[in-house]
Length: 265
Image (cartoon, rainbow, N blue to C red):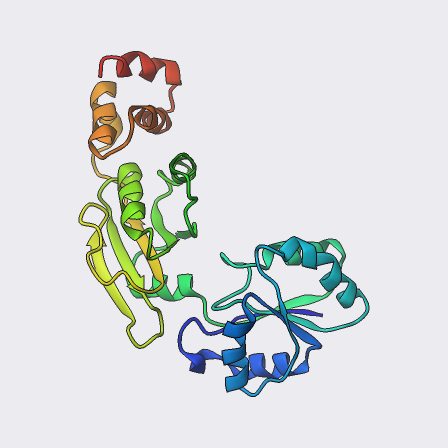
């Protein structure tokens, strides 16, 4: 049996008795960083072999883990913090286990996106997007898929990228309400309400979750002329090429129609 076990996202006391029981029962535990996981396991006096399982060796480990499961071994997968498979290793293994028709289950635990969403007070439905890609073109292509998805959009953000990510989100979504949650369940946990235009001006240390309230604008951009529609996105910081894509998506028209007008800019 494969157990996907949620681990504390900040406070060690978040770990539940069932999770401790499961980790004490398995043959070995897969984890991202053995040093990080050892702190948790030592706190709960869990003495089981640890095997490193992270995004750089995930595919290499699949055959070994699946082979052990097929032989009747019990294996647990944990991440450094939170639920495995959510912006952490696990998805590939789960799919392989499904393919091989092996038994698996989830042992509930903390999840940063759920905690942060509840703290924001923003409306459902919500959509979890996770970390943005590194390249600007990839970021824009991804975000454009969610531009007209109304409700709460949830992002994980690195402390090193928070300023740039705010700029990118503003260029696509315009000025929308944002809740910034930092260091969930830790001593310095805090939440800040701002907007994409105002950005975040607080402490940039730690782990961040951003919840964007993508409320539908009362005045549709489609009521503008195509030229003014283009200018709207360019004024928000989008390139001319990206502005053309955004206008085409908003209006449901072909690129050629917008490109002819964009030449005037």
